[in-house]
Amino acid sequence: MNLNEQFEIYRSSPTELNLEALYPKLRERVVGVLRWRMAEDPDEDLVVTITTDVILAIPKFNVEGPASFSTWVERKVRNQAVDEGRRRQRAPKSLSVEGKEFNSLISKDDPSFSVLLREVFEQLEADERTLLAGKLEDQPSAEIADSMGVSSAVIRKRWERLREKLRHVLAVSNV
Image 1: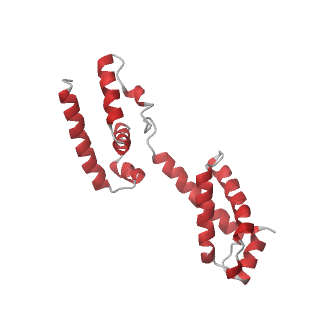
Image 2: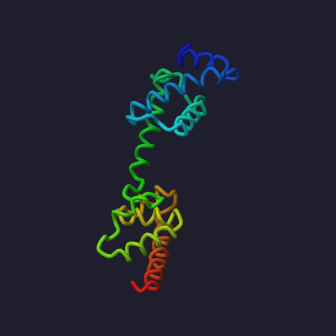
Image 3: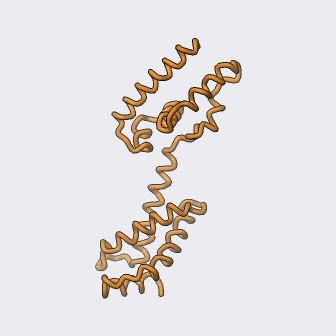
C-alpha cells in the first residue's frame, strides 16, 4: 500500500490511523528526499523529527487541494531540509565548540601567547565559545543570535560581558 492509499484509509476513518503501517512508508520517503536534498545520508534524529512533524501535520492536509498526499509529504520534507541546510550554514565554521580548529587563529610567532589563548578558550562556556567563534568570523549579531536561539540584544550584552572577561584575563596575564 503506498502513501496515497494509506492516506485514503485515514481520511475515511481518521480515528483508525495505523501509524505502525504509515511510519515506515513516511520514513522511507523522508530519507529519500533528505538524501536528494542534502546530498548525504541524513542524521537519524533529523529523520525522526521530520517524520514526526509530517505525521502531526496530516490533519492539516487539504484534501481538496491540487497536490496528492505523497506530493504534500515531499514538499514538507523539502521545506524542512532547506531549513536544516540554512541552519547548518549559519553555524560557526572555523571554530568548533570543542575548540579543535582554534589553532588556525593562534599566532605561531609567540608560543606563550598561543598557550594563553588556548587556555582562555578552553575555560569559556559553550555559548561563549560559540559567540567568540561567530565574532571572529565577522558574523552579524543577528546570525549568531539565530544560531544560538536568543535575541540580538542578548548577543550584544553577552558580547559586552565576554569582552570584559577577556580583558580581565589578558590584564591578569600581563599580555
